[in-house]
Structure formats: C-alpha cells, structure tokens
Image 1: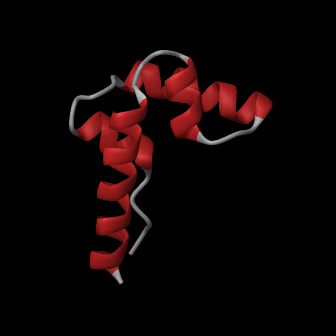
Image 2: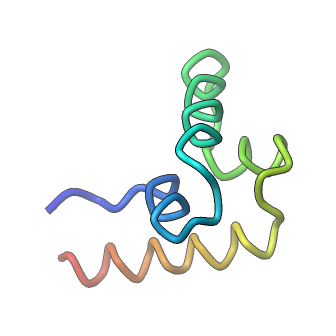
Image 3: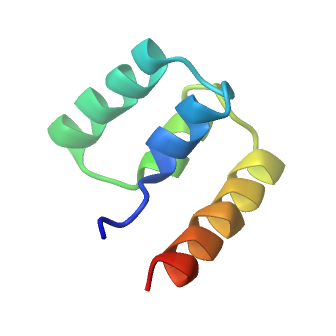
Length: 65
C-alpha cells in the first residue's frame, strides 16, 4: 500500500485546497524541501497543524503496514 502523503491528507481534511498543495509542490520541485515546511512558509498551515497532521500521517503509515 502506498504511503499516505501529507499534502493529500491535508486536502482530504479540507485544511488546504488542491491549488494550495499544487503551489507548494511546484515550490518543492523547484527548490526542494519538505512539503509541510513549505506550506507553513506560505502561511497555509501553522506549526500546531503541521505537528498534528504529521502524527495523523504516521498513524496511517503504521496502519497500512
């Protein structure tokens, strides 16, 4: 099973839009870096949201194993 991607989880939960994710992914492709940090730098999420959704992502990874 594929690893759940942070950006996709955020879009699923309507925390960010697909357009915001695409913007962050374009920056990541151009400059590198972690998607969560890029989303924070763009102001789309804050640090507590990032921490929460990293935990959600980790939980889904464990369940998918």
